[in-house]
Image 1: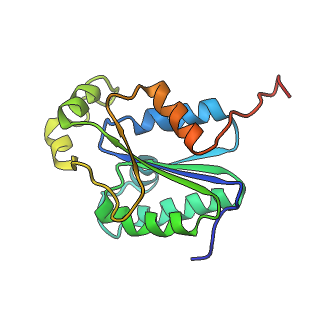
Image 2: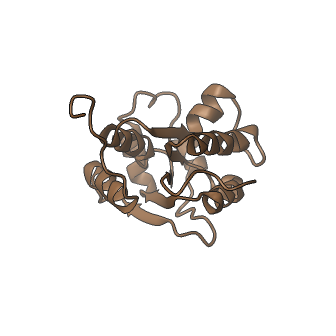
Image 3: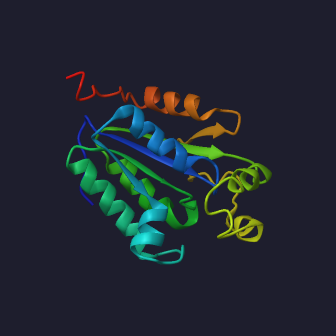
Length: 180
């Protein structure tokens, strides 16, 4: 694939187990940043758009990559977020991050299994799946081989995580319409 994005674009990859906080961090960053930041969510593309199971070689893997590249090539900063098992998504993420011309940051939200269960119980979809499914999905520190993923632990608050990622990726909040 050709290079993607520009020196001005930011690519942030948020990975971690179910209920580790990815789906709270990504919109939190966009909420603070403003327009011009796309969230490419694995769950949205895999479950909602394609309605497919998570398996190696599945169509959603390429769709995630194409969506991220399209947004980057059109000047958006991009957050790719999801469980994104290294065995299924590792090659795609490695290619995408190496092809990105701008600043790229990778994060792994590490939360012990017991804490993911506690957090899951507070979600609206808590009755859709439970401990058995979450146990089958859980991968302890499923880091990408050879990557520079920064590990964020359960001790980091949501606000601290958002602020740290924005600072690390050099994403300054945009001026609001009223401020312009």
